[in-house]
Image 1 (cartoon, one colour):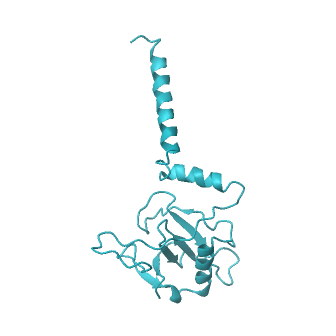
Image 2 (tube, helix red, strand yellow):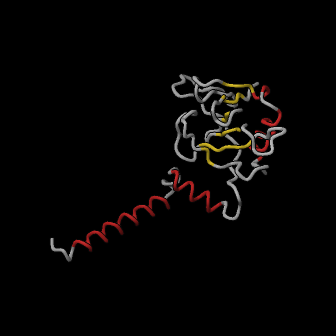
Image 3 (cartoon, one colour):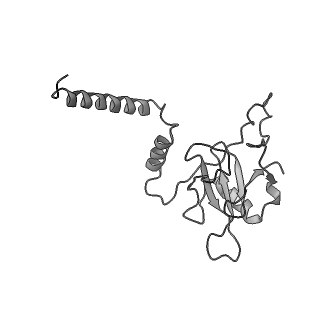
Length: 173
């Protein structure tokens, strides 16, 4: 191959890859990809200060279960993680969970942002799977240390110590 044809081959390959990528995204098959979902979310929330996640969905049955749990039954997403009854949470956490279920509005502009799970204290999931919400701390002049983190499948986690520890929220009690 001569030097003159090499740039044409490179351009042709790049063009083909671009067309294939656009076709993949347009068919909807790329919508599960974190960057595709993020760009779709960004397009849908243009002009707002923070993403407005939808209400959590019921938790799916834990992997490996022989029979699925009846509809509406809470199933922990990670049996090795401690759980806490919703009724045992501070009243401010219950208020935050109510706001999440309604889709906002939230008191802090950082509510609803992606929680990155950098320390891997929650089950490993794709980027953008988790979102964090502030739980008001009485007497605090900032956001405080209390948070609720939600997962894309509806699971909810409580952290009273700014993500040092988590408990999965059991909505049955």
